[in-house]
Image 1 (cartoon, one colour):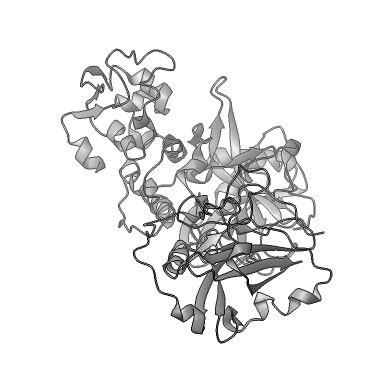
Image 2 (tube, rainbow, N blue to C red):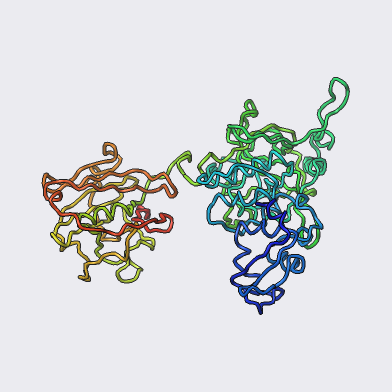
Amino acid sequence: MFDWYARAQVCYVYLHDVSKHECPDAPGSAFRRSEWFTRGWTLQELLAPDSVVFLSRTWTVLGTKASLARVLEETAGIDADVLTFRKKLSDVSVARRMSWAAGRRTTRVEDEAYALMGIFSVNMPTIYGEGRRAFQRLQEEIIRQSSDQSIFAWGEVVSFSAVPLSTPTTLPFRHHDPDSYLLAPSPAAFANSADIVPVTMDIAAQTASAICRGSKLHNVQTFLRHPLSRRGISQLQAPEFTVTSHGIRCRLLVIEDRRGASPFSAAVLACQHVCRDTGARTGIGLILHRSGPSGDTTSQAATQYHTGLPHQINADNRQTHQRQRLLILNLEVHDRRLTAKWRKVYLAQQPAGSHDRLLTRGVRTIPLRFLFPAWLLVELEKRGFRAQHSGPEPGAGSGSIGLRTPVLYTRWHMRSVAFANAATGEAFVIQLGRCEDALWATVAFTPASSCWDRDGDGDGSDGYGEEAYPLEVHQYTAPDECERHHISCWPDGSKTFGDGDRSVRLTFSRRQQVPDDLYVVDVQLTGRVYRGIRRVGRVFHPAQYNVEHTPTLDLTGIVD
């Protein structure tokens, strides 16, 4: 697509949200706020063509890419020299090009990567359905073709003194966080990386030499060259990156504690941060965290590293959304306890599929929510049983069904979901609860009048779809009452309640897709009475639903 746009004589951009009377130069103009600048695929439409003509919603010409270059630079963050081809796109750092896409969105998550292939001159198969794995593949292709290490310079930045490079520490470290890997999870990670530029390795080595001043290996030439070969010629060292099944194998210049007491070290990246106001340049390092025990130098060749500091270590106690993974290498700072060496290390890659699924995490959380799928509610309603609730959620409006507010629970608590058949008067109640870290469930068969909605309108829901039903809270006097109903003790996660006339079989399964901290509920009705109930006619079935934005029955309250 990028080449196709590049070969076009002119590209017309129709802005449906900009009027013909709009002045694009005006601060806060509709042109600057146009939706077109937030879409992922339009980035290449802006960069590739020689001529781009912007049109208002009435097809009036607002200007061209050349005439509006400065406005576009302020709006999209793209250099005016790049837009007017006075500067080659390939001369712009990888990090800066990624930052142009940081605030853009695409309908399909894979297009975050596919829309950038032409901008980085890479080709790779398009596999819709792979999720964010596509962006990881894009970065791997860039690494194979480019030596620009700014691709690793994303995330939060901390000062040199904030990292315990020479201090032993045993803080816990969550390796499964998306920002603990070498490659970025999405273009959004590069939002603050527009001012990162690549430099030569000898400049980066000079920074490492200054920091390690006083150590035996502080000479720049020591960092840059191998010992003399058989022919008496020293060979230039250079970083290398190779994608393997154990992670990305890298040969990097690493600043570390000489004794190996600290699990943290810093890889010197061949890039710098340039201050926009003063033009001052500072070196950039990548914080590494060794997965093995501190002081273990016997297996360093196979040791895997993750990136960044644990969230417990935070410069100035700041709360950040991203892991602090970049280090400012200040020439004025030096520590004789540190040394710099070329090391071949393995930097962890995010496991395939873990961008979109949490199954690959080392430790899965205990489910504390129950999800009633939309298809299940429809199937039960075909049998005449409609889910009801006994009252609105505290803090919600009257008649509210969705569980949208946090609730504080005591040690033993219960929530109920009632299903009532208005035609026959039959009803049953599924009781779900949490006893410390164990989840339990049981079924009670009650008259319909006790679980029908109090308003008397016979309609306990505001629509179809996956819903959570906030009902009464029951207090147990002892945990023994619920132990026999613990879901973890059920064979295959299933158990049947009732008798030969009325039986309900409950089955609970772990959800594999995000979020995975919940049980998916399955309900099967058996017994003479339930089998005799006539099925109703057509029932609306929701075409699609989104669990992320749909309330579920939550038991994540604090346990005393």
